[in-house]
Image 1 (cartoon, rainbow, N blue to C red):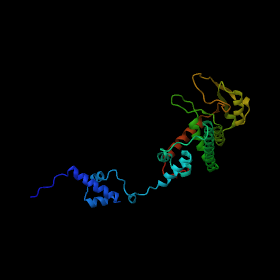
Image 2 (cartoon, rainbow, N blue to C red):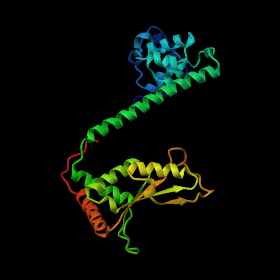
Image 3 (cartoon, rainbow, N blue to C red):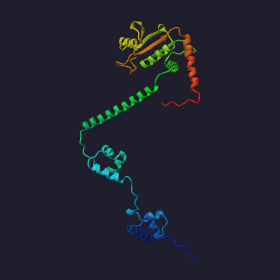
Image 4 (spheres, helix red, strand yellow):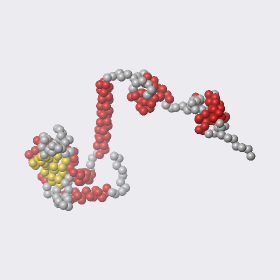
Length: 293
């Protein structure tokens, strides 16, 4: 029985390496060298040709090679990352990898000039964002259209239940009392009261505001909004300022809140509460169409 061959000696590896390197320099691929030398161990094959670059014909073209060369050329011309990105449309992270070995371009502007340019660009972007916000709001407002009496009724019920006074088991107060600082909310609420045929004589108004604000100006503002005289408002409730609290509702636009109370309203309150729980029950029904919003 023949004796199996022993392991290759170190000189065998060196002989193979010389042959592999020679074949590599002749332009052979790894597959061709493997077949020529009958070596089917990839690790050994890579060790034999280590340090020898593959022939050009075996290289796969890189889609970003042209971009890389163009980025380097622009950098050498003094281009910044922003300018190169604008020119080529690639990411700054890629640009950084491609040109990091190149010298930085000399600063052409002072820091103050660069900051002014950046600030101007940022302000333009903020204006664009604000225009987009306003356009979205205008489009949504136009899509609402006219409200039917039923729609206004349901809106008013939900509005009251969010912002109005509620009866509690531990404190029976079936009052219709609404408090808010948003003029739009006040207008919708008053339209709702009119829909419910609440006589103006049953409606009372009162301003609630911090002591440090323009109280007289706020009283005039709310009186004009609801269409009444200042002297017809009930006595204004003045809220004392807590020095430990940092208030953000300050300035000329701060006018406190308007309190709207309906008299002789126990039955009206019960119907509001009942309607609200009717909405709650109906909201869980199925088969409703999706809202486009």
